[in-house]
Length: 212
Image (cartoon, rainbow, N blue to C red; front, side, top):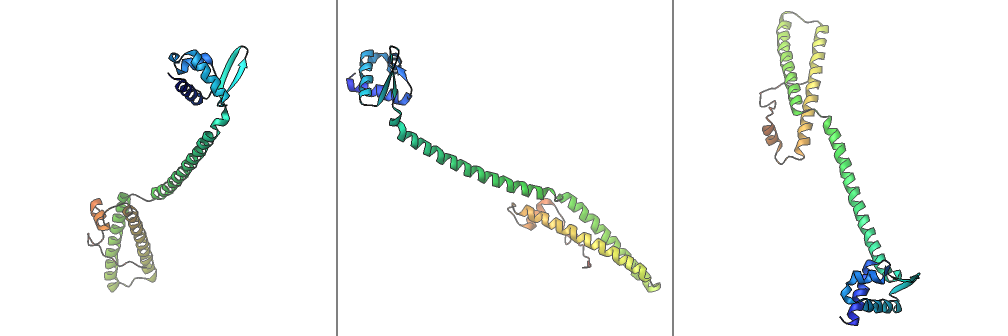
């Protein structure tokens, strides 16, 4: 191997390792086939070119790269590391914001009753309203024969108003729940009601005039 080739191998090895080495360590690292004398000459040449530095420790010579030769590369590496860190922080912040939004939405949804619960409440309220309507018809028939007192009429109206208010509230909650599901549902509201198996007032022929 030519002198310039040996010099190139030794230089690349020392700069890549970037640590102190004695002559024997360099020979082992570069390959003993280069020859110790050739490696020694290359080290001395690199010292003369101020690519390497040499220090005496007792009778041993220790060679190591001059750090100012790598300052440019080191600065470049540091700059790239800072850029990657800034990008990673932006991604982390975005993920944290998404997580916070999802947690808020999850807490709000957890307070909403299930469709089964709302459907059961709706059926109970509809039964109550049917019974009240039946009683009203009965009272109206009786009123023709026996005039109700104002107190009785007030009790009936109060009860009917309470049930009407509760029914509207439950129906609104049920519709809000459906609207929340529709945000991520690919079909129409009518299709969602059909897929879930819900029955609307119109489906069961339920009609009642509620007090406002």
